[in-house]
Image 1 (cartoon, rainbow, N blue to C red):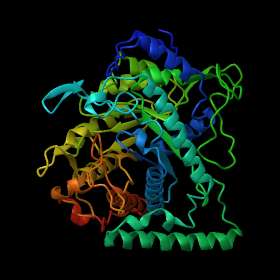
Image 2 (tube, helix red, strand yellow; image 1 turned 30 degrees about the vertical axis):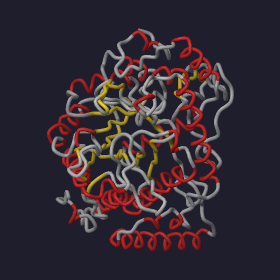
Image 3 (spheres, rainbow, N blue to C red; image 1 turned 90 degrees about the vertical axis):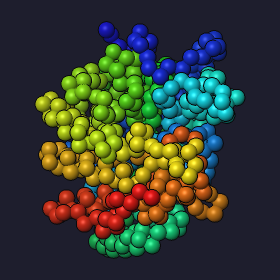
Image 4 (cartoon, rainbow, N blue to C red; image 1 turned 180 degrees about the vertical axis):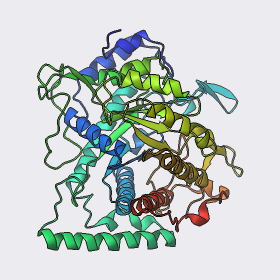
Length: 504
């Protein structure tokens, strides 16, 4: 079967959204097809090349953000807090690993969420499940899918991307002033002390570089003034993804529309070989985001999502869990990456702390029998490990101890197999309330959040997220392990050693 951006329509589709007004949907999709791309092939190809470095152990991948963005989050302070958290985490990991950190945010498009059931019970009434702001509303009276929300997703993504670019262009990521990255919200004495050590070491290194080179070297990748930063989301709504899939044939503008969005990285571009840079080469790029992934519920070999993903030039992710058979994993890789392009596919392991040692080794062995060069990533925020709060059963929570256990187990398994855990994929937020307190959705961490604390600042409309301090806890854990690996030592894990078994 030949591929086109619409060939997925001939396949069975999971997690489909049924719109009552088909004429309105077609009108919206036609509008989306004419709007400018959100990202460019040059940016997408640069990310794929950097992910090839991750697959080879020459860089580390940090991917994180909201489980599902809300349109209301498209505002100054939420965007700043998310960006500052990713920058802080990457700085901590960079300090320990001495590796470039590839930063991908779940932002500017992560508006849809798969659901296990199409309906749910609210106050004794069965209503359609909330599928994300680009499908329907959170209020029970606003659950009918509305095509207008697809346009809302595009314009909120555009505004978010624009502000991120503005922040980076204004020196928000300047490593000479990392303390400006909202670290004042962190109240844990352990984290404050650990981060102070990172800052002191960093400032010594920057001072040495300034004296030795006579400058800051801020425009190069890994420099001190700015960073590469990429966007990602789960590609659930294929109508939306198709509308923003554009063909490039070596010319600077796509067909059929013209104009491209300014790059996320605001400095001068470094020329990078592009799949769209060869005359006559027909390449299709999903220009809604730099990186998109297939979820565990939509990775059927004969399904619409795999069919769509096999034809785009973007680097892609595939969620891999206990229900994925090793031979099935190999077949999926053969379909979506027939050319065996390093960095093309990221396998996002989502097993759960109690199942990772049962299933990850078999998946590693299966991939090792092939010539696929993949990025191995750990998603320790599996929805199956969510639990109901004992204090308030209406609230879902996760145990921080489970999150770090899955990450550390994954690192140990890859080390034993001679492969590389190249990155982590986390649901997290830097959001704080008016008094500067982080969200309270997951139990544990250096803040020692307990079940009784969850209702204090619980904000998620979907799954519980790591808060600011818990996210930095994870960054220090990763940094410690990568530092130990670099030195050939056993991880010390000083900061989190006393948190491993703590659940309440």
